[in-house]
Image (cartoon, rainbow, N blue to C red; front, side):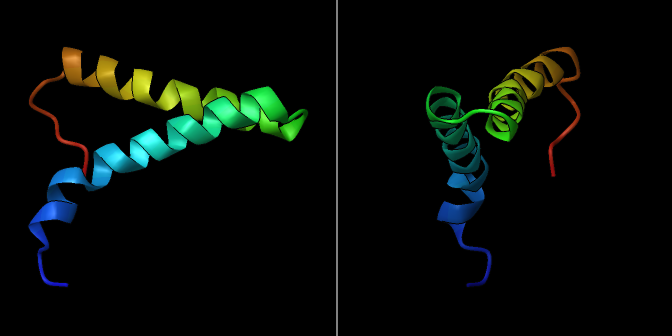
Length: 61
């Protein structure tokens, strides 16, 4: 696949969405290590939003 436009457009948002869903599921079903994973998975979108708000010129590559 050479520079697939769909992947370039939706790849990162889908990855963030899947990570968020995994974080929500593991927060409900898991314990121990899974609690840590869920905290990280659910904090990542917040970190990305805050960073994008305060530093709008920087790109996530």
